[in-house]
Length: 477
Image (cartoon, rainbow, N blue to C red; front, side, top):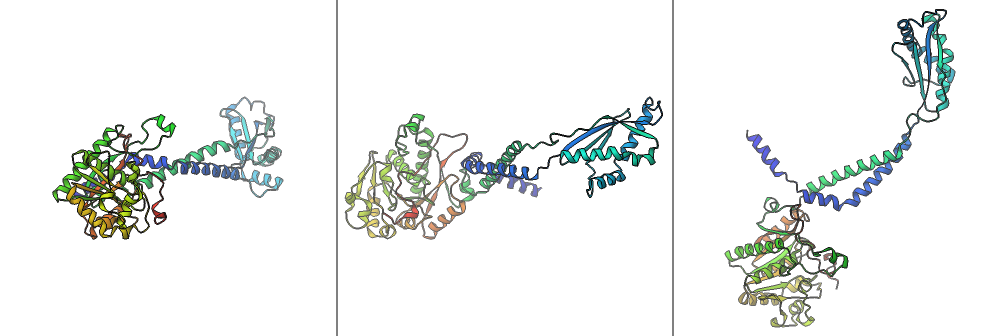
């Protein structure tokens, strides 16, 4: 009984997310197409190489006893004689004679076939060969020499030819290369679909919200649903400039906005319990939407009558100035402040959202890790703690460099953004463990860009607000 219960529990752990499975298959459409074409071409080649045409010719005999006029009237006796002749033609003696006359080593058993029409004295002889000439030659040899074998078995019985054999002009098995190609392509495509589906299922990523607590050693802070950047077909056709996905945009979807309200409430509750104020928002890899999450979390908290400071701590690929469409001068950038070229007051910019201030930058700095460990950042954080309710720091991806850990040293907690079906759970756990080893409090993980068949119109295209270099190009201005 316990074993059955364990089996049921293990089965319940096996979860298939139809949307991510379908998306992975559709995303690899070109692999399926190339595989299908390759399978079709391979099938075409194999069919042509292995194809052997078969040509058949037939003749019909009437079996009768020589000099017996009543033999034809006695159908039962005639039918018996016809069956006897069938065995004679199929005998090894006849095959040996045919082999000698045609100069071949052996005759395959399926080359010569006979059929007695039931209730008659008629015998149909059919010969099948690889060429029309071989087929007509073999049947002629049998017709010329069957009497040599039958004389000792059935005496004066004769066979009258009712239908002469003709030279076959077309094969019995015409080559259908096109049909074989279609079947080969379909089979190849189906096999690749099954393979991609299996790999998608085995891919240990975060596909559903409950995967967070099931696969990760972290608290589930909620789910941010996919949101389209272009709200209409007309915007897509016009290729309108992409705008940031912000909750204060009147065009933002209800589910998108409500998801951030729920996230802000959860974050505020968890931080208030421990009297925390400074939060680092990061991810394992780039393009997971951590900058968008940081911006919207800051906006949502500000809309809840909180004083919030949002710091763009990504010095190698800043993006918050694009999200808020605020372009600071070089002398008032965060990076220049860390290099000791400005005072605290000049780097804080007011946003259009009441209660939200911004610390931004546009330039890229190759020595970002060293800059973030300076006393200037510690001074800014200390002043902010006294003047605002919350400080949100947009950090670079923690799995690619050490800037996130450097920022976490000045923060009270860390929030990790995980894009749906993007990063392996093992890699996310490694980042979480790394923060804990440096004595950082991991607030939890939020699933970003979540989509399903029941909610196809929620958050997407996160965090790509300009081509300012990939993280593997860090250090290049």
